[in-house]
Image 1: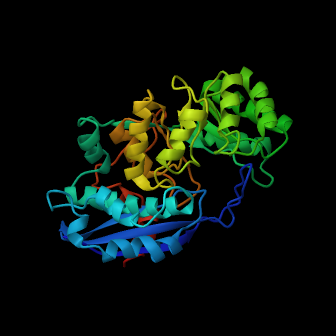
Image 2: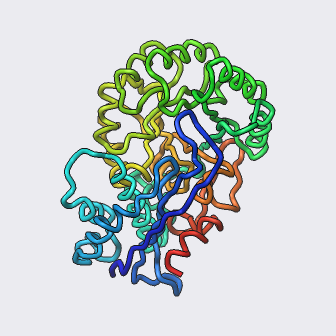
Length: 388
């Protein structure tokens, strides 16, 4: 048993969407295929992976460092103790050989995309959906049958206006979502408050609405927004300041009583630990949004969950960023609190299996082995083109 090749390519995510910090007109992502010599049901087992939106493709790093390290390793070093499947932890160790600590930037994206493909292959070789394999290995065999998801939208777009925003939110509710998130910080605070009130008119209660500033604010602006937002009792107020400004986050936690959320732009267990140590986050209400596809993959995410458990945090406080099938499997298999969703945007990577609808804010997972990428036709077409 061995990996015979690893292939990657950059895929555009061209879009006119904009948050408080960036637009997505030039955004790309990496798609990865890990090809093995294992045959299941008459076909070679191929694992697929990709990185989440918000970080550009990292193919150069894969080609120069991480793919050659895997392909140059003794195939036996990449197998688990049974010799009958790949070992993601050993493969991760091979990828990170020669890498210095720190510097958790684009490197974590490259490793995360390959790691996703490896886990997809591992589950396919085992003949199991990934979430069930994870539940057996790490959760005492208990897997969730469905996962809470929220619709992340409300982006700034040319000529969208309040009527366009309201139409978007109504569409999410018609699709089966009960909770939504919109962007703030890309307009004046007075306009953002009008946008929030327009959405509240539709969802009916602040507990069904979260807002996301994408790290745009300095402390004074973050506090000004917190004072304006607090009466709405929102589901959460997300990423007010720079993701590494733990002092800003700590002050905000002292001043703002309702739930806060952050973490999607922290890419290692160590950075997540610093957030818990110094960011003032409150384990009884706040949300952690670490995204394995951007932060060295599931191998590192497991370390992050162990760190959180040791510090008194429940995995239920984790609701990953990314809106993709990998995080959905992790949420179901490891008992997380839910998962982001991008209805109709950031395609083909956003979204879940084509044939499974969102029902009353929850989505089920397919029974197909692996992550389930083959159950999403547009995404499967992209990753399949890597090896066809």
